[in-house]
Image (tube, rainbow, N blue to C red; front, top):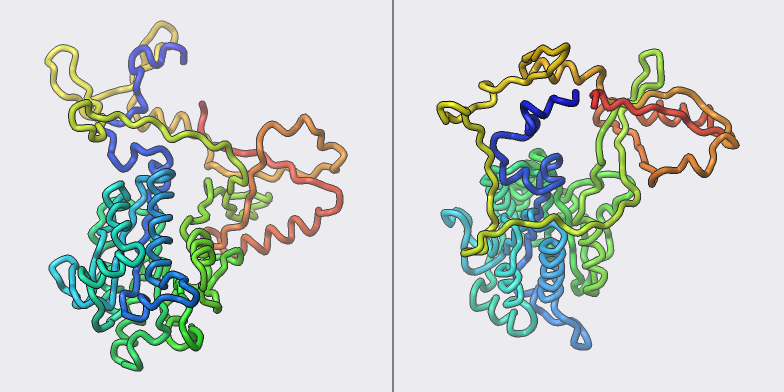
Length: 402
């Protein structure tokens, strides 16, 4: 294998790099997306007691915090800001009344952060009143507009989340038709994989979630999530804490099959408990426009200069002083010997586990019921039967020769 790259040094490089796949982890998992759906009714602009900021101001400060963290840590994620219950209407083709799309679903940037700054404080409330105003409310139209924002995105999205900020537990004031429309559109969004969360804010007399919003929001994704909180957020710190807990998706590093032997398999997700924080990779910029530069790779024929497509190129290996030419599919079949997964080898006493066996931070595995039904039951039985002073011995199959 020493002379393999002598003929094709970049055999694994793609002919053209996709902009979506040029950002590290996005090549595997896609991009996260988050839509802020904010109530712009007059009740949101009422200041709290003892000079506390209004619910609208708290929401905008929370949105600004999320925008800032996205720009620093994951600038390729998509974020949108939509207001409902406005007097003015601004959305694609102006199909929905009283819905104002302040920011389309796109990557955050410095200009968007400056736009959020205009909505902060007393001047921000005046700017919002002048720009959008407060009018009738139709949450169903707002959810429909958000659905269109998602459908217009052509990129691969790994996680879609929508957060509703409001201080009104009955936004339609008993209008049954609007309530049914909102429930229908919320169900449509959830069927397409959008997670709907409610960030309800304080109001005089208390916020009754069961009155309307219990049928709108999504159920908790797992037991560790906070789920639907009954008490509304009274302070900015409480609201930021709830948003921060919901903002990031708990995603597994990978999903593997865990073989217990004799055809008994279960699915597990692999989670990283601790990892080293690294600086983001460098981004190449154009020296004149300061815009990000896209890299494209093209292969040309050595004699006629024509562009070579992937199916025009072969792989070669010198063996016994002969050059053996193979197709890419043949090379892939040679490399693969088994499906990736974990295989249970047995159990060892705890006293056989030594300190020098630790070579890197441990990974946490958790049964994945969505992949193989009954994985949790098999995992519990296995650990329960061998929990006394023993540890599992497993082998990891990558499924590829390197």
